Amino acid sequence: MSHDHHDRVVFITGAGSGIGRATALRLAGEGASIVVADIDPDGADATVAAIADAGGDAMAVSCDVRRRDSIAKARDTGLARFGSITSLVNNAGVVTMENLDELSEESWDRVLDINLKGPWLVAQEFTATLAATDRPAVVNLGTIEGEVVVSSGGTCQVHYNASKGGVKMLTKALAIEMGRKGIRVNAVAPGPIATDFVSLEGVTSDEAWEYLGTRLVIPRVGRPEDVAAAISFLLSDDASWITGIHLLVDGGWLTR
Ligand SMILES: NC(=O)c1ccc[n+]([C@@H]2O[C@H](COP(=O)([O-])OP(=O)(O)OC[C@H]3O[C@@H](n4cnc5c(N)ncnc54)[C@H](O)[C@@H]3O)[C@@H](O)[C@H]2O)c1
Image 1: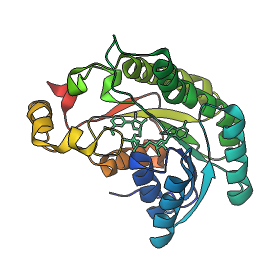
Image 2: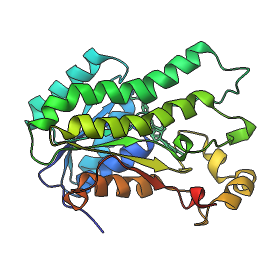
Image 3: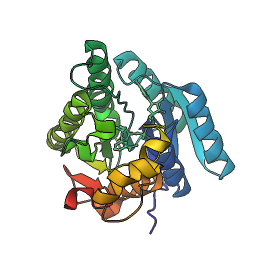
Image 4: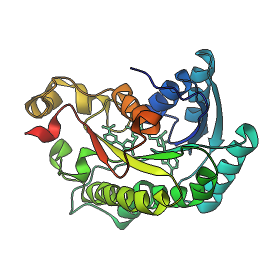
């Protein structure tokens, strides 16, 4: 199934890699113009090149979601090129693998700043821009780890869980606040997806599969395209009566 995004301009943070890139490619293939926003210019350029190769329309902008001035500059650069921005995907996110004893304040601050403060800052900076358009929508990137603790590699990541649990409630609160201006706000909550986020072996090796295989109802690791499909749906008019949800895209992980 595909969705029609022909009149849409979508700003995607962290679109230089993984789920963000797959989402940019999918939405561009469905007719949207894409602002590929990333702190990594090479990644952003590679995404734009892939979209152009497939016949789509995109531009790269430098953006650090921790900094209001950087977000505003990226937004204004996108607006100057496309005239409007109708949709936002708050995708940029990071994790560090540290147990409670090892976890430093630097890691806590970095993960919370990018994963939780970032989506709030970006949403705030985009509210007026989105509200000025027809049928605007936002999708935030949560995770199953906003619902349960997943002891990847034998350790919990308390800072990651805290940040993504926050994203779930941020989504609900923004759905109400931004909803007053006609903007729908939802989140997707992926299970393990093969990207640069954790090492590929971390989700595909035999050892990893011993753990993952006992959890997943659908017996394969997720692909970035699985998440992109859910984001496409939530941004589309087919989801016009859906707001404030945390949609699991997890191969059934939370079923057991
Ligand atoms: N991969 C998974 O298994 C998985 C599972 C659940 C949720 N998620 C979430 O999906 C989102 C994307 O993850 P991914 O797997 O594609 O990761 P990824 O590492 O492949 O991509 C993350 C992107 O974010 C960018 N980024 C990092 N810091 C930034 C900043 N300060 N400002 C702007 N951009 C920044 C990176 O340069 C990179 O391009 C994250 O929010 C992550 O928490 C991933």
